[in-house]
Amino acid sequence: MIRIDVSKCMHCGACVGTCPVNAMFLNDATLEIYDNCIDCGLCVRVCPVAALTMIKG
Amino acid sequence: MIYMEEFDVVVVGAGPAGSITAKYAAMGGASVLMLEKRQEVGSPVRCGEGIARKWIDEVGIKLDKRWIAHEVKGAKIVSPDGTEFRIDEEYAGSEVGTMIERDIFDKALAEDAVKAGAELRLKSAVRGLLFDDSGKVSGVRVESLEGTYEVKAGAVVGADGFESQVGRWGGIDTTIKPNDITSAIQYRMVDIVPDPDYAEFFLGTTWAPGGYVWIFPKSETSANVGVGILLSNVKEPGDAKKYLDRFIQNRPGLKKGRIIEIVSGGVPVSAPLDETVKDGLLLVGDAARQTNPLTGGGIANGCIAGKIAGETLAAAAKEGDFSRQFLMRYENGWRDRLEEELYRDWMAKEKLVGLDDDTLNKMIHVLSESDIDELSVYRILEEIKKRYPELVKEIEDLL
Image 1 (cartoon, rainbow over the protein chains, first blue to last red):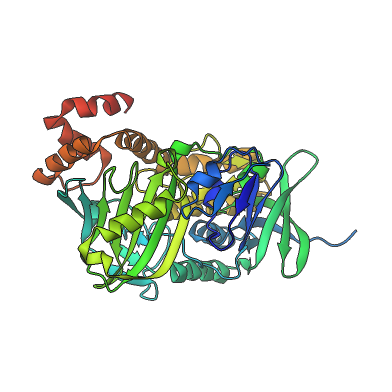
Image 2: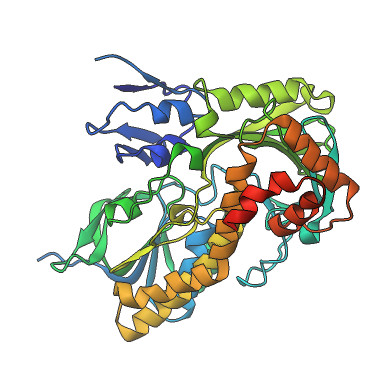
């Protein structure tokens, strides 16, 4: 699953627009990740400031 | 049954594309509601803030010194070995000429939309679409300060940017591939020594693999300094920031500067989508992937398509017909105006991102020695072909 480091997140939406399965939503300053995430890791790579990490489990 | 509000048009997102769409729809007599998830239009800024003057008349924007920060003479393209190629702003695409304050610019466009009769609601996030029995999009579900509510619409406009959800909810596939997405970060820097007369673009794998670094001056001593890297070239999370920090450290005029703003974002650099309209739905701007895939600039095309969308929606409201068939007027209109250039620039991008530094050096040497005065893909290819026909062959076949 994907973990958000809220102290790094810029709420820019780069991850949301990249997500291939529509599993993310940016509501103003809150980033939500849904259960249909497939752990592809594209959001982790596109994040310009490394605010997302993939964790096991 | 509880009374439900109804508008001819609901625009999701109050960026430039959304505001221009709302303005032209309202001017043409449609009832328009524009919903913005943020508490403030235009903030936070997510943009390099460069525009050209040549397209703003076309979309009815009046130059306003409230949002003009600085003027440049043109663009300067810098090769990996430091060779410069300059181009006059008149011929340098849709992003070079005037540096703007994007937050004030966006507010001015939203103000125009409101003055034309559109209603604007802030802190109002659209969380889903409504559909009627036939499958036509018939409204939106909103979460806002006032709570959760639904609004009926003849048509919903997805002007919700790179992270657009509206298209996907409505059955338009806006997913783009990693080699068509740019990871970007920018600092607004002060106490620096930019070239105040040029918007600078730095190419090469050292600075920005499959992208470029930009220095867009906002005054004699300040600039937007940023980098965009193709997602398919990102090796480690946070690469974009690492590349930008390294570029700044290697640049004497920048490294003692101070950062007063950080901007990040994703930029679509794809070929045009196959469809941007459905029954009761259309997409505009970055949400429709109308961004220029070579420069990453999205304001010009978003505004140009927005005007066509607004005019189409006004006509649709008069006819009471928001079907896909009617909205094809928008789809055909924006394609006539923008598609050829978008497709050509996407192919040029596909070619450019595969070039090594040696080849980029060769190309920019040729251009810097030539008398070429126009930054169009066609003219550049023509010039390079004279010296390195093999470089041009492959892309020319595509064209």
